Image (cartoon, rainbow, N blue to C red; front, side, top):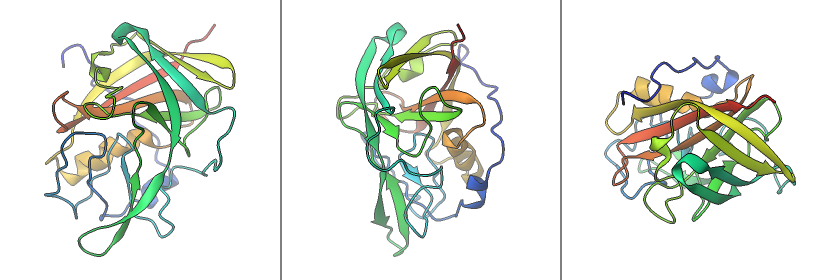
Length: 221
């Protein structure tokens, strides 16, 4: 942890926070094990694999782009950790909790990184969110935690290359963490006013007790 950024930029409060509810799903779809002990607690995963329950079952991160768009991310390369993989669009599905409540669960791409379809597009203001498995189904983000500030992330979208420089690598406690901590974790996948790339997964390589959040900003030519 000594090499990893620990003082993250504080995201601005948005209307998204007003939509947060206490009941939401805790299935850890991007990890090998699922912790169901807190199924009825507020588990707002920064990996984007779960989202708050909504009347329309849509996580409130912004308008859905619907059908595939030519400008959405198609591939990502993280040269410093040897990652190069396709990117596919991911959305969410409605699930029913043990209590009978309905929640929205994020899908997670298999053998690819997943672009959250209601996050921003590369080259536009806002938060481009990509999530991936860390130890199953290709484990494309297995080594995500090894990124360091200054490393470069390359994203291809719409026939163009977009380069980002890593600014922060955060490992955040999730399983068994207080609700306030888990809610704070989830804020990293919210919309932001600035242009950024957020990469998210689980940690460690053999478990899911923490979340890895990597924040990168565009490389200015």
